Each structure stands twice: as structure tokens, then as C-alpha cells.
Amino acid sequence: MNWLTNTFGSSVGKKLMMAVTGLFFCVFLVLHLAGNLTLYMGKDAFNSYAEHLHSLGPLLTLAEWGLLTFAIIHISTGLFLFYQNYKARPTRYAVNKRAGGRTLGSATMPYTGVLLLLFVIYHLFNFHFVDKTHTTIFQIVSNAFAQPGYVLIYTFAMIIAAVHVSHGFWSAFQTLGANHPKYTPFLRGLSLVFSLIVGIGFGFIPVYVSLLV
Ligand code: HEM
Image 1 (cartoon, rainbow, N blue to C red):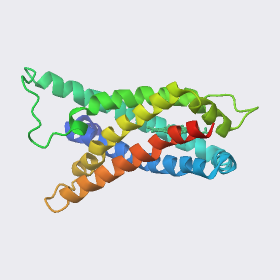
Image 2: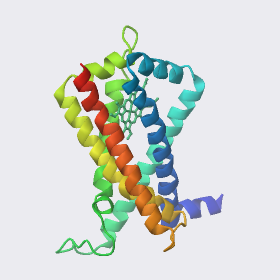
Image 3: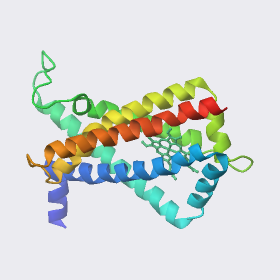
């Protein structure tokens, strides 16, 4: 038991937890995007996807609790590491240097992370914690995106998600040991492609639905 607290209590252990839970969310994003893309096939396809998802019953509940647990670990560890780094830096940098491989994604991780958390809470209250007895999920989504405010917020949130994963994806692999001159350029490229898939794939949905209604 002692090794467990020692491992996960250390900075390396915390970074490992960030990496594993972060990659888990990347898998979730791929599955969620695949499901959402059925929207392009029309309302019946989207409603039928949602029905299939809900027919998983206890399995879906288990996946939801897993998501929540991983989210709590990822967010609390991320905030803790941010606070530790902040405390360890005696003075703020006078000039914000982009040297040392710093990118928009890496420099803004805690901020894009907090914005994403706010988005997910907002998103769950839009589409998940809603009364679905006399309506369909397609109706709920199209009612939302008929309003320009929702389209704007969702499109902005998808840009934030893309920026967050553009660094998070390859950084997770680096933490897990794929830190080699041979693999790093490939992983950075893959990370960029993944962030574009997330940004464009999710980001175009609100615009498309708003044009339909
Ligand atoms: C245009 C973008 C998106 C659309 C249209 C969308 C749509 C939906 C819909 C319709 C549901 C409810 C499914 C149901 O209960 O039947 C849902 C659930 C959810 N979405 Fe999204 N989503 C989008 C982006 C995202 C993003 C970027 C994230 C994460 C960062 C996310 C996280 C979640 C989570 C955690 C759930 C709850 C899953 C569950 O408990 O089953 N969504 N989404």
C-alpha cells in the first residue's frame, strides 16, 4: 500500500495519472464524435444512435461513473501540479518567451482545461440532464443550435478543446515514455491531426444543425 501512496503522491506519479486519464478522454472524444457524426445522416440515425447507447443500461452507467472518476482525478491533479509550478516560480517572466518548444497549447493548458470543465458542465445541462420523455435527442440538439448564442458558445468551446488536446495528446505519450527523437516529431504531428479532427469534427456540428433548422 505504501508504494501506491509513494508512487501517486510523487510528481512523476501525478503526471502519469494525468497522462492515463487524459488519453482515456481522447478515446472518449473519438467515440463521442463518431456517435455525433450520425447527425449528418439525419434525425432518425441520430435518435437511433442515442437509443442504442441508452439500451446499454448498466454498462452506460458504469462508463459514466468511470468518466466522472477520471475527470475528478485529471482536474484535481492538473490544478495541483499547476499550483506547485506556480509556487516554485519566484518571479513572473518579464517576457513571455516561446523558446524551449512552448506552443499556444502548452502555455495555456490550465486555462483551456478550466474552460473545458465549465463547458462540460454547461453541456451536460443542455443535453444530458434534460427531460427526454416527450421529445427526442435530435429535437433537443436542434432546438439548442437554432439559437445563435449556443452555436457561438459551442464553436468557441470546440476551438478551446482542440487547443487543449493539441498539447495534451502528445504530452501524454511523452510522459508515458515515448520521448525519443525518432518518435517525437511523429507524435507532435499526430497530436496536431487529432486536434484538427476534434476542432473541425465537433465544431462544424452546431453550424450544420443551425443551417438545418
Ligand atoms: C458539437 C459538439 C457536441 C455535441 C453536439 C454533443 C452532443 C451530446 C449529446 C446529444 C449528449 C447526450 C447523449 C444522451 O444522453 O443521449 C452528450 C453527452 C455528453 N457529452 Fe457531448 N457533444 C459535443 C461535444 C462534447 C465535447 C467536446 C465533450 C467533452 C469535452 C463532450 C462531453 C460529453 C459528456 C461527458 C456527455 C455525457 C455522456 C453520458 O453520460 O452518456 N461533448 N453530448
